[in-house]
Length: 296
Image 1: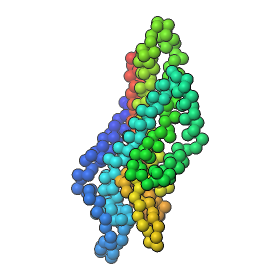
Image 2 (image 1 turned 45 degrees about the horizontal axis):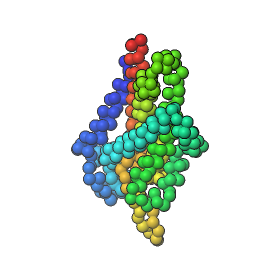
Image 3 (image 1 turned 90 degrees about the horizontal axis):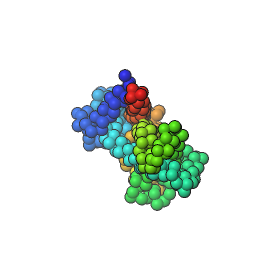
Image 4 (image 1 turned 180 degrees about the vertical axis):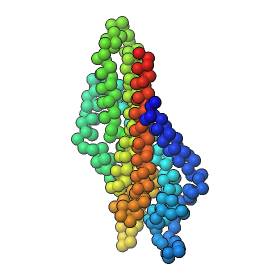
């Protein structure tokens, strides 16, 4: 039994249920109402409110129910990470496959990989996000999605190229060349079966890695979307105006001591999603490996 695939599939169903049916659950406040002071038997409470029957996962500093915020942000969260990984693999496939056949693309890929290899991707994205034309752009989220996708294109393209090189060293590939197969036939018959499995499992695994990367940005105050507000005494501050899950970690330095339920709930949802994609990735790989063994 493929336990990884079975468990990952169940967790994915739960995740999709939360995303598409969660907003209709009775305990979810789809209006995300902000609350100030609240009168209780113990006296007056001010947000953030701790977990209770009214707020199962507590509230944030604006008095908004954390469970409702997480449910409301699930669709945007999945859409963002899927978009990033789709762009990354689309570009990487062109570079990775092309670099196997073209020396020019091979050199370009080498330069690309070296450019983004000497420093963690998070630093490049932070630098890009701080540029004025990105900071104040109406399309800031699209720019950052593109940046996050592209900084790891080199890593993904190199995996694709390496897979093709390994396949080309096997005896059956040489047999295909001897029989006069064209490059298209060789690709379909010998490269694509293994390449397809590698790309599929890497794609699913990258969904979790990308979510973790975006969470790192939120912790240090870099948001995919920004709003600007004035502060007392003059000046302007940037504020997050997105419901993507990692955005709930923007006050982590304070919440971890005074509203730990916000941090724990958000990290719990992020971890659940990352584990889901990890199990699916490993489960898919095992499924194809077992099917291949049975066919021998």
